[in-house]
Length: 420
Image 1: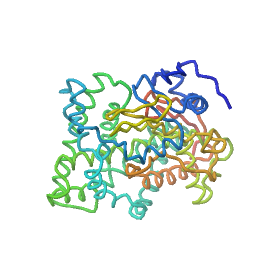
Image 2 (image 1 turned 30 degrees about the horizontal axis):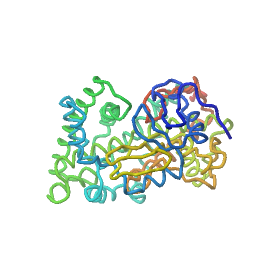
Image 3 (image 1 turned 90 degrees about the vertical axis):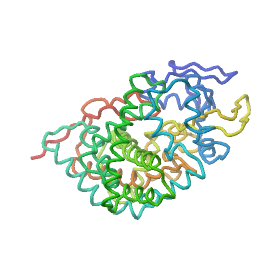
Image 4 (image 1 turned 90 degrees about the horizontal axis):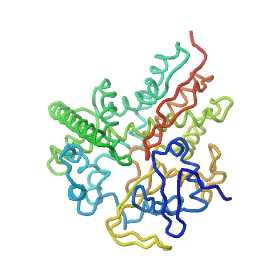
């Protein structure tokens, strides 16, 4: 099936050069129109706005996640790579955090850090949080139920995962929203061409975040607990596994990753489910159906649309698509999740589909370490929300934020029957 080329992009078939502004309003609100066209006519493109090759097909994305000719670690190391981009004194604190991030490393450093933190995120450990997540979900709904309306990004999707990851780390629950604010400032640096003001805010937040982690890590050394920050701090105290900088970077990454994508996915999921019409509770009638619904929400409207990797050698993909050592590539996760060659009727919302194999959490050694936690939070929070408010409906057309390659709603205004 052929799809018309969206008017907000231009494409040169001979060179496969794509010009598509990530901030174009039509693309921000519905990137899937562009992805449908890419699947039909341009599954591998050189995205001029980013200056690297991007891949939209499921098989290509899935394979490249695992291809060891590519990785997350910048050739020459993070600091050398960013120094080559120009003067960055205004990002010194941000760069200090990023340089030791698990997400920016490859083996053996990646293996050492991931082995340490993985114990806290295995399914049996995460399952222990079920009562806490249920209690939090009910408490948040209690806070707005009598009003008959709620802005769910602010009132539900944001505070729940922030509180959960803060508890996992052994940090005060009331610090959750401050962590969110710091995180929001930092992740703006991953967007397309962040401004100088965004960079300075990101740097200030990275500095405050790092100071916060160091202060609480010092408390954990004096009085350790059964939490992830105590685990990281003990490893630092061993003197063998974690340096002080690695401790700070690891903690910040886990806190940021532990809520950022879940906030977006919660909002996207509520929008997708309400768009189906009928009783939303039907999607959560059994634990098995709840799990299948969450997987389909992850496939249907993922929160992360691009994941970048670096080439460690020259690679020729054919038809003029050649990547040199040191170049970046972009894996378009959300496009891969709607690939008609991989999914039957990919634009239809079908929980329990037999071809469920979304790549929203990535693949290979960088598969999202927080996937078990995210799945549990989504299953519990969505079921609780629709069980409590089965007549939930949209008050206004939801609008996505201009935050590509993250994809999430800026607001989600809803109404429902007022509860006594």
